[in-house]
Image (cartoon, helix red, strand yellow):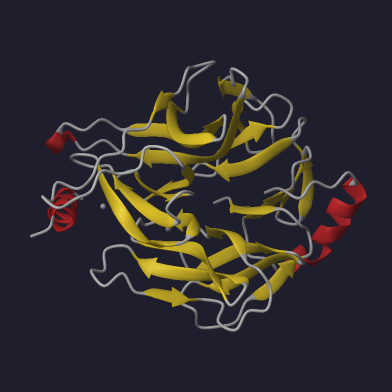
Length: 305
């Protein structure tokens, strides 16, 4: 039995870059077609305005890489003025600098790692934010408690599965983290190897490479990933069950003549939204239909419950 199978069995026994516009008018006008977008879709583009359900909301500061807490009550983002990690209420008010960028670093792509406590295994609840930090061209993954104030983030531990033939995981070049599921698992990409990695975080943190790709997003239930892979000169979206031993990936955008990037999952796990040059497109997570352009607002998509 592999380490991953053992880990999953234990879990089942216990329970479960930015396109910046300077025109606010363009952002608002671009959201005109958002009436057809799925409920909860949000779009940030590097300004202080975020499109939420088709309406432009002023967050009071330029921001990038916005993500939402699993319950939708909080937003995490990188402050565009100083590069620090900030958490706010859903309308941009009540901002708290969770971790202050010391300078000389580029922080990006925060993701929420939230999990309930499991007393039978003496595991405390998790309420963290994981993000990538680039210093001098070397990127690492960091983690900080989501409720912290001006805290110093810690380097995220990355260990292999306990199989005898497991290779050490790369500790640098790691970018684009995405957490999900009931146990705080995460996926991330490595810019040096061009691979997507999984990080299981339950009884013991373990991980491994899963497939070739970039910009991964973990499904809300923690069982699937969507990621970007180049096919015939275009960026396609692929979906894969991370627990499948075959690691077979399904192309959700076959025959695409446009680039699909920065994918994200809807809270119910049924829809993928992604950025294109023409705006935001959605596609069924099971690949049962072609992508549909649902907003002409250009920016990074995210879903709020």
